Image (cartoon, rainbow, N blue to C red; front, side):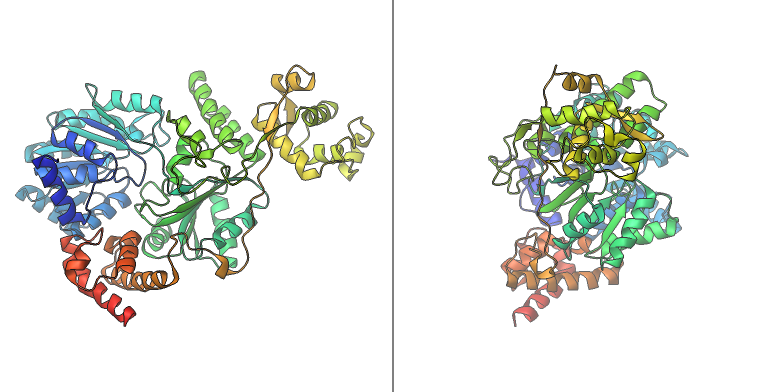
Length: 611
C-alpha cells in the first residue's frame, strides 16, 4: 500500500511524464529528497537518474538548482521538460538575451521549478547570492563523479560545490552518478556532504546491453561488419585520437554510412552541426574521441564501438552506457590489441603524477586489460569490478548473453610450452623485436629482416611451424597482457621479458590462457541484418512510419526527434495501435501535454497506415 506522498508522486509521474511506474531505485532516491535529506545515488545510465530530481521539484514545489557539466546536456533536458509542461530554464553562455531575460523573469516571479547551470557559471559573478535571495530549496548535482580526483572526468570546478551549498543556506543535496567504484564513491561523499548522506547504490548491470570484445584484425573491416548488423540505427564509434576519428568517418562514408567525426580540435560550428545531426536524425554514426558523449541525452543509441581499448573500466562503462538508454536492446563491441595496451601504459608512465596515483592508474588499466582477455563471463567480470556479484549471463536473467556466454563457453588451455618457445625467441633476439618478427622466426619464415639479423640460424627458428603466424602474434599479445612481456622501448617498441616471463621461461611458473574467439562475420546483404528491437514485419513497418512523422515534427520545431517521443513510446504505439486519445493516453511516455500537442497527429498516422 503506497503512502499519500508516493501516490501523489505517481500521479505527477503519469500526468506530466506519461509513465505508470518508477524504474528500479528511483523511488528510494525521490523519497529521500522529498524528506529533505542529503542523498547520493549511484545508478546506471538509462535508469532515469534525472527523474530523481525532476519529480521532487514538481511534487514539493520551490526551486531546484541543477548543476550539470555540459551546456548541450542542460539545454536538451530543459527542452524536454518545457515540452512536458514543466517550468524549467538554464543559465549558460549559449543563452540569447531573450532566453536569459525570460529565465530571470521566471525566477523572480517564483514560477520556475528547475534551473540548470554549469559549475563554472555557479562560481561566477555573484549568482549564488542572487539565487539565495530567491530561495533555492534543493541542489541537484548531476555527473557527481566529476568532483572526485579518482573519477575519469574530474572537473576542478566541482570542488567548489560544497561552498556553493553553504552559501545557499545548507540546502539538501541530491548527487547522482552512473560510474563510481568504491574509492570514487567515498571521495565524492567526502567532498560534497558535511555528514554521511543517504546512499543508494543500485545494480550496475545493464541487462539490455550485449557485451563483446575482439582482438584487432583489420579494425575497419571489423567495424564495417558490425555496422551491417545495425543498418538504420544510430551509434558511436570511439577512437583514441582525433586523427583516427576523421579517417574512420571518411572510410565509413566511402562504404555508404552516414558517418561524422567529432573531437575537441574541430571548429566549434562543425562540432555543433555534427552533434545536432546525430541528436536529430536516425541512422547516424559518430566517430568520436571521449570528448563526445557526456552531454548526449539521446535515448535510442543502438550501439557503441571502441576502435581502441579504453583506458579504464570506469571509462568503458560510462561510454557503453550511452547505448540503449531507452531500455531496448543495444550492442557493444570493443577492439583491442598490444599497441593499445602499450600506449595506455606509456600514457600513465609519462603523466606528471605521484607514485601512488601512478600505481592506482596502472591497477585500473590492468583491470581493463583483464576484461579484454577474460575467459569467463564479461558481464560478471565487469560487475565484479564495481563490487557486485552476479551469475554468468548464460545462467542469469540477462536476455542478451555476452560473447563469452554462447552455447559453448571458451575454456582456458595450458600454453606454457608455447609460451616458453616465444619467450625464448625474445631472449635469443636481444629483447627488442616486435610480434611480427618473433612470429616469423617461430614459423620458420626467412624474411629479409630475419636473414639480415641472422635470426634464421637461431635454435628457435621454425620451432613453431605447427601454428600460423597469427597464432604466435596473438600469444605475444596475451603474454603482454598477462605481464609476462613488457615494452622494450617507448621509442622503438619491441618486447622484453618481465620477472614473470622469466619464471615461465625457466619452468618456475606455468600459464593458462583463453583461446581467441572466432566472431562470425556479418553477411553482406542488408536483408540479413536482424532488427535489434525484435519487431515483426508489420509492427516494424508502422514504427518506421511513425518515426518519419516524428522526424518531420522535430525538424519543424527545431528539436531532437526523441524529445517529441522516444523510440520506446513509438514502438508501444506500433504494437498497441491506439485509435482514440484515451487509448493513446495509456501508452508509456505519453503525458498530458504531449497528448494535447501530438496525439491527434500520431493517431491520424496510425489510422492512415492501418487503412
